[in-house]
Amino acid sequence: MQIGTLWQALAKLGTPRRLNRGEIIFIEGDRATSVYLLEAGRVRLYVGDEDGRELILSIVRPGEVFGEVAPAAGTRREASAEVISRQALMREIRWGLILAQPNAAALTQLFLGEIARRCAERNRRLLDQAYLPVEGLVRRVLADLVARDGHVLDLTHYDLAHMCGCAREGVTRALNGLARRGILLLASKSITVLRPDLLGAGAAEGA
Image (cartoon, rainbow, N blue to C red):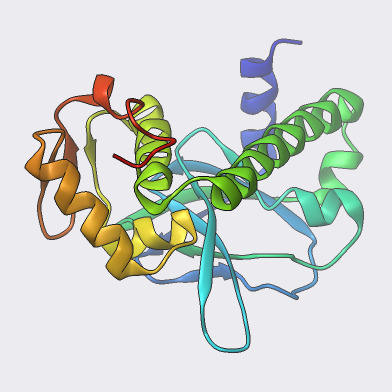
């Protein structure tokens, strides 16, 4: 069975949910009994600490599944999920229902592939945070986002700082520097990448 067919089969198992910006889908530490297939909108997956600081692990886009790690592992949620678009439409699928399907093995394999992909992305981000300067991190994250979402990104400096794991002030300085060089166009709640071909140039040096 092809991956597209698997996603279609998964969607048919789900209960539709429509949520608004700021609504929480699940919270770190919750019991995990469902996975989610996002059909429209955007969702952020993030972790927080006791001081209220947050780190965005990933931004989920339409056609992607999320919340699959904890049910597959039989653990509690390791992150929280929040709607960051005006609205989000998703399918909530009970994990037990997935396991009861005749094609459960194929569906489980699909989830394992998603988990492996996300782990690889997070490992690379951790290495970036350890070795790249702030501007290098900003360049790398923006390049990844452009490859997935196009040149106009509905993203604030605050969002980008959480994705980079950096202070907002440092990210703002890096963005302003890139804007002065004609690589970006900045607005209050969006970033337009004018020269994506230049994002990789100087990433390691941050210049």
